[in-house]
Image 1 (spheres, rainbow, N blue to C red):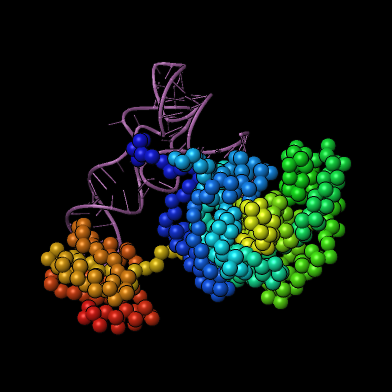
Image 2: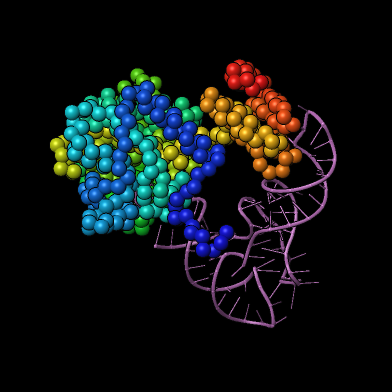
Length: 415
RNA sequence: GCGAUCGUAGCUCAGUUGGUUAGAGCGCCGGUUUGUGGUACCGGAGGUCGGGGGUUCAAGACCCCUCGAUCGCCCCA
């Protein structure tokens, strides 16, 4: 490679071969399942005004200030490459009058951008599938959304992953819990890790999932959200868990599962690989496969009417790492011309084959005596070889494929 | 933002305590062999050893800087 060849941007990936097939398999499966649950397909812009994200996410963490791809366009507006789907979908819901479709079940997928240090399962341009139900306040919406996520993972053949479920209560419950956590940890502040001492100021809920031993000794006795839940919030969570049981979705209570952003209410969840599972191994430190929750507070932060909503998103790259090998499928037919006199005839044949809906590779270049070897290496159900004015058809595999092919090729007079 | 490990051919890698003209396998291209054939053999193209600086008679190897990759911490919408 010449040294003046431009390199790929850090944290971006060029996906090829089996990895690309696995990626496509995830998207295709998502599309199929989303139709089963009657989620409507939406397409969203890749960039928005920066305030769409800054107002939605809030200025609470480093997220907005350090981890977004923001830039000024020629008109002087501050724009940002979307770091998530939800805020943009909420904006679209408000600006397009999608209230008329409420409750709106919407699904999309595509690239997202976050300025983070790349590591296993984490890239600066990455891709997610996403599902949202907007304008539905009832716990049944949470159940349907989770049932869909659960079925998707099953259909992808991903095993050893469990739904971790928690409730953050309503705004009131949540605020009281947060205050109690701060009180509790303040008393032992000196014994906490440096990171958690800082979290105490910026993001106290996050102390609960600290990996540091010094913090973990205090976690068991920390105040629980359940002590602060209102009656309504308790009833809501019970309705969700009852619904999940009825839907046959396995779950486990995760009292320390939290969300950093203020707009989250009630249900919060992540599908996480079980310790020691192959899935946990494959994902490294980026363990969450699919995550989401209820975000009843979001619409207001964008200036809209209070609108209940719940959604989830999952990284396609991470899912693709879990679905195993998806090798590129063999061609139905390889047409190989071993005699340049017959190139046109070969081209005619391969065109007819493809027009009939049969996948075909065409080999008519390079050393004549090596073309057949190439044809064998390509991998196919059948090889149609042309030389010396003659055609020879050879089946590489037995079974349904050959039967189907044979009948199709007979119709084309190529057998 | 912090830390660890690693950068040699398109790919996977070897290269001894620093010592001639930097190698292998695979892949690619050409040829011979085989001739319903995935073989074997011969040949070829392809590297300023990530980049820059330094030490030395001599650096792919040692030192510094830098860029990149990988993994972890932080963060995680």
